Image 1 (tube, rainbow, N blue to C red):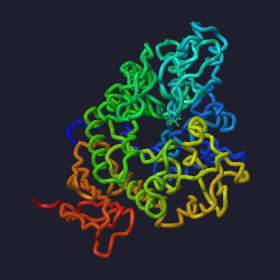
Image 2 (image 1 turned 90 degrees about the vertical axis):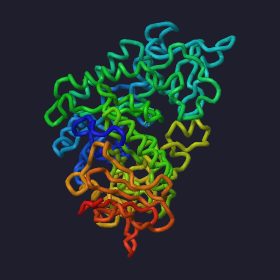
Image 3 (image 1 turned 120 degrees about the horizontal axis):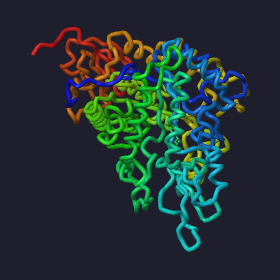
Image 4 (image 1 turned 45 degrees about the vertical axis):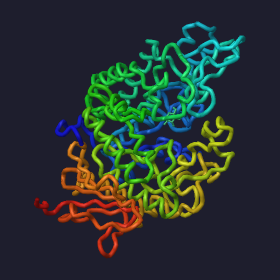
Amino acid sequence: MTSAGRGVRGPWWRDAVCYEIHPRAFADSDGDGIGDLPGATARLPYLRDLGVDAVWLTPFYPSPLADAGYDIADHTAVAPDVGTLGDFDTFAERAHTLGLKVLVDLVPNHTSDAHPWFREALAAPGGSTARERYLFRPGRGVRGEEPPNDWRSAFGGAAWTPVGDGEWYLHLHAPEQPDLNWYRPDVVADFERILRFWLDHGVDGFRVDVAHALYKDPALPDAGPGQHEDPARNHLLPYYDREELHPLYRSWHTLLAEHPAGPPGSAPPGERLLVAEAAVFDPARLARYVRPGEMGQSFNFAFLECPWEPAAIRAVVTESVDAMTAVGAPVTWVLSSHDAVRPVTRYGGGPVGVRRARAAALLMLALPGTAYVYQGEELGLPQVELADDRLRDPVWRRSGGTERGRDGCRVPLPWEGGRAPYGFSSAAPADCWFPQPQGWAALTADAERADPGSMLELYRAALRLRRSGSARAVADGAALRLLSPPDAAHLAFDRGDGLLCAVNFGARPLALPESFDGTEVVLASGPLTDEGRLPTDTAVWLRQVVRSVG
Ligand code: GLC
């Protein structure tokens, strides 16, 4: 909105909609109750019909599943419960045939404790090369009984675990996820090998997990009192957002641009994508990950975490567009993921939550840039309260049972039928990855396809318009103009291409402002009032039919 006319870099991903698949909860083909790659392949036509441009698969690699697969024991293989490498190739080939790009997760910050490197490190003495691939240090205190510093795990508790010989190892997540030492050339080289391996198997890009944390201050200083409590200041932590990250990402950019073309249908060199999962909340700092020659995109968690309030959303939209446009990168928008409480629940639950989630979807899909949609968001699934004994998230255990963690958004998708497991699997409902609740018959993909007022049909209509209709996706936010005053109970903007969007957060129906004269409604998240006003928690897309004069 400030730096007009620079244009946004990037090919297909500049304005794409990418659908996140969490494979074990998506579709099961072999009746073991665990979603798998052949199951996902069979459902690809659903995604083509939904109208997305790309799919991102969360980890499907061999793993003890201490953190839903983000603890990887072998980065260049497929977990047996999810399929084979041949199944991955079939998935990618079928996706490409349907016009869908494929992203996979790259998890470079840590490995599983079952990775051969970590096993070797545990068996080796302190100071050995094997231990130097990770971050082993002697403990503090007279007998080394205290952790080497005060760093905290993102899942609660200390970020260090003792191994019984006076040394401790660092894990910014679960103890089963030891952090790698990125100052080691063999670590760097191994991840280059992993990138090349998946490019050869046809992937079009990578979502880079915990992209802000690979390098730690080599002196491993204490973070200091209070430093862990304020996410807005997390770039000041000695293990977050360090300068050394950027040369590494530039080298990956070059690798992706230069590695030879993959199988037919995959994105050519130069059109591949790196997207950063960087928990950096200052927009200007986040933009540093997507400067020319680095990554293509970074997730915009500020949008996901924003409360349903016009001033807060307005600020996030403005700051995100300004920061990304300044470096020529597309803004990304995301309302849900495998780590977040589902939007209909987060926005209040029940009919209010559904109404707001519908409005939020139209807001997100009108904004310039790329959107990420997490499986089940398009069905309006709520967060599920799982029984204690079904919870798998390390957060549950490490918080001593005070935080339930993220499993409630990882319940298998309901596809069809009137009873659990709703076409997800032929296994008994209790034997599925997570049990689905009863009462989801109206939320299956089949049921929603037959209901013009469903969440699925809203997403389909919006995505159809983004692709080919009067609300085509735009990449560049430079021309975005806010039409509502900062203190208004609504947010309204003109994208600069004749498409206007308004969201009413206020309690009273909103008469559309004068700037909307000469427009016609293209799509609305709910019915307007008889007087043509926009009800509370409702969004509308309008298109200029006549240019207003003066
Ligand atoms: C990312 C993933 C999350 C995982 C963590 C550790 O934040 O999205 O699911 O637990 O990294 O790998």
